[in-house]
Length: 281
Image 1 (cartoon, rainbow, N blue to C red):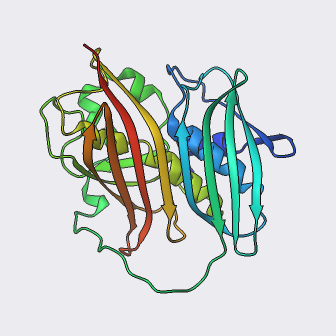
Image 2: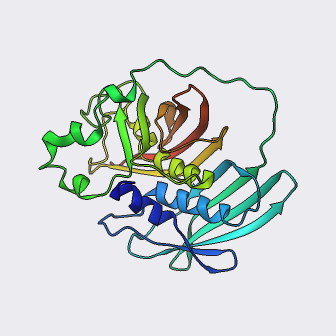
């Protein structure tokens, strides 16, 4: 396990402080707000820690307020239902006495049934695609903050990077992702790492269609909600193709979809995110 991945596993190792209440630590880095993928992953871990059987099959989450990166986050779990094959949890993330995030997560015991899926796109293998750090190396002097932060997810973009120019492009994006090292054989941990990774690049697919970028002083962007469906057990420490698109943006909101395929071509996770895409006048 790399030092960066160890950092992420530590973030997901929540402290139980009371029945159904957990505390999550914060990374020691300079950010204006807490990374949304971190909150979603920690909330899913809190929910999973209260489930006796089954694996997560879906989550539906809302980002309510920006998180304070200098204060630990409390996660309160509501055990809504414990059924024979389905278990449901609601999680509220709290800082300064107010909710900053909530999530509903459902867990399901594995069953057989009819199967079909969209085929995996044909793309170059991840071994032939340079890692992000290699592609950004010529810009190290301008991206000192990026290089100073840990990067537990190895991201390898197929084609140009989403922020390489301000020109509008088609709202599609593909990249290979995996955890930067080997993870323990814990399905909940792998699902949480996938939740963390899913929020790293999905929003960028919305911005590809427009000449705005995160560093534009007239642009305000934020994740509003995030939904994931886990179709099959996955390993987040093995290569996954992240196939994303953005079917619409209107009314200062944009929608992005993502699909994760493993190397065997199995569709393992589907997701949808809506984000605020506000251009200030």
